[in-house]
Every structure is written in C-alpha cells, then in structure tokens.
Image 1 (cartoon, helix red, strand yellow):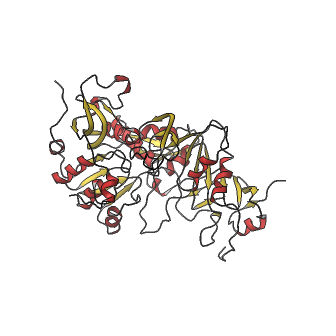
Image 2 (cartoon, helix red, strand yellow):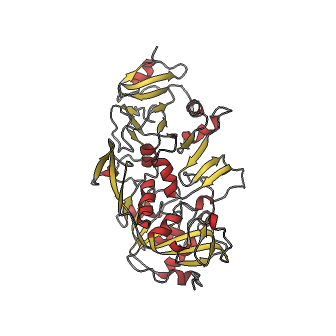
Image 3 (tube, chains in turn red, brown):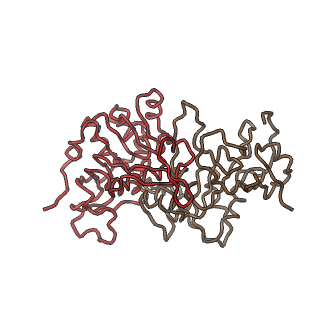
Length: 236
Length: 221
C-alpha cells in the first residue's frame, strides 16, 4: 500500500541531515513552502547547501533559515530581491558562499539532474564572467558552455492539491521550480493546501506525477510571507 | 568623453516605451524586462495582438490587477502582482526557459547599463567587489530570444555615454542587441557601428555624436 502522507511538519523533515543539499521551491514568495522551512529551522540541521532562485525576504522563511546560520552555501540566480537583508549582510562579511547561476541554466541544471543527464551545453553566459573556467564547445558554428546537472538530497515544495500517491497540482505562478525540484531530489517533501482521495485529481491535469514525491503534509492555510514581512515578524 | 554634457530634452520614459511599442508586430510573443520595458505593453498599437511571457512561468500575462485583487501566487518576473488573460498558460521554470533558450520567444525588451557597437550588452553588474552579484534570467533571454531591443537613457546620470566602443562592465551577452531606444534616438546595431534610425524631436546628429562613445552613422537619406 502506498500512502505518502505524514502526520506532521516535524515528521516530514526529521531526517534532513547536517551538510545536506536542499532544494527549496518558490520564486520569491510565490510557491515558497514557508511552513516546511520553519519546521527545518526547528529541526536544527546545519551546514546546508540550499538551491532557490532567491534568498528570501525579511526574517521569515528562507531568510530566517539563512539568518539562523543553517546555510553554508546558496545556489541561486538572484540573491538580492527587494526586502532581502539577511543574505547580503552575511555575504559581504564572508559568512556564506554563493554560486550564482543564470535562472534558465539553474532550471535546466535541476531538470537535467532529475532526468539522469549529468551535463549539457547552453549558449547562456557565453562571453560573460559566469562562463569562466567552464568547458566550451562549438555546435553548428555557435559557442556553448557545459553545465552540470544538479541533484539534491531533499526538496521542499508547496502545491495546491495532492493525493496520497503524491500526484500534485500547483497554483498559478507558484509552480515555478517545484516540479523540477521534485524530480531532482532523492527525497521530495511536499506541503499541500488540500489533500484529495486518489482519483480526485484528473490524470490529464496532474503536473507532478506521484513517482517524484515521497512525503506529503497538509498545511491548509499557509502563511503569506509578504504579510509576515510587513508585520516585521522573525522566525523563530 | 569626460566632460558633462548638457541634459537634452528628447523623448521621456513614456515616449521611449511608446516608440519601442511601434516595432512590436501583431502576433508576437514578447518578454518585457523590469522598468521602462514594462511600459511597452500599454503602447502597442490597437489592433495588434501580442502575447506576453514572464519567465517565472506565465504566457498570456495581463495588466496589473485592480487594488485589492492582487494574488501573491500570480506575479511577474519582477515579483509584482499581474493578471492572466483568458487563454493564458502556466508552466514550470524548465519549460519557461525552453521557450527562451529554444528561440520560441520573438522579442525581448530590456534595460542596459552599457551597449557596445558590436551589440554586447552589460546590464547585470558593475563588477564592483562589494556588489552582490545577481543575474536572474537576463543572460538566458539575450542568448535565446530572436530579437533583443534595449530601452535606456542615452547617458548615465553623470552624463557618461552608455553606447560605447566596448563595454567596461561585465557582459550579459556578446553581440546580442539588435536595436536601442534611447531618450534621444532609435539606433540599430550594425556591422558598421551604431546606425541612427530616427532622432527624437529637436535632437541633432551632433548631439548624439557628442554623447556616444562608439562608431556612429547618421540617419540614412
């Protein structure tokens, strides 16, 4: 019998270990699994490498994970969104590493990682500082750089609807990195707004097939990051 | 080019966006960058249907929602609330950038810090050691989109030319820019250098020449 539901946020993240690579879904606030991130802060794992497009805002969610000293390295495309205070400060004082990756290359590296492709070539970044030191090759008269697929030990993602097999449906632009991160992580942990019985999601509209998902926890009314930031909240 | 030039009154930001909008053909799939490029959508001539792509995962982006109607899970690449038109589609990041990298998007309009006469673009970093580097999707867009339009002031706030023989800032892409819309002129990037296509009202070739650091060609007669 397959039932990927877990009873609590704490149980969902309990085995995330020190030094793990964790992909965290979200583009800014949209799709950020804020309750899972807070559970990870409570759990205490340190020395993490985190893959996310940004570095969070204010002092909640991803920014709080970083502020609490749990992240050794960020792999991201845009670490200084409006309202991002924590990362820039730590970065300038040399307390956190940054691997800067163009957004589309980041997405494709994650997709490739999940699809069993160790590396690929892209024209993105050719002739720029981000191509320095990377293998280059010419195809049909155009230069390309080699980029490596990216895998993770864990992915934390958020969706709108799930069933116990792990089939997922997302909400609007909150989908962003979640489907590919689910593919690229050894263990994919999902917070869903709604849990339905098998058959409750039309197979034609499933976005992430359940095979890519390991654990599901229901968070019926997730917090809104913008609201917490506006209220000046800190986590914990 | 170190002496500060007098500020000329050519096109304002709205007029720059509106001039660029004239060059967006009916039926185009278009990605608009943050800032003045965002304004292009409101000036596309009536009767042309254009589909807007935002790289965080939406094709068919509509205008800004009414106050109180914002949805934190329906945003654009600048993380601002938007709407989805009837017939819109949502997709994940790998598909979104396949649209870009796979040359399915027709036109991208974006801002610039510098453009070289070879069409090199610098728009993501000043290269200063204490700057937090952040690139987002800019390198993917310029490498993958078929036509790249830049909208920018002709000079920096300090009066330095932004159209240069070669960029001093780190590049976003090499030989990628097709056309530049400044407050003073519309300029094509050609093998012979910056080719003026159209001057803003009251602006002369000499005005542009004094404010441009690369090879410059007057409007063809």
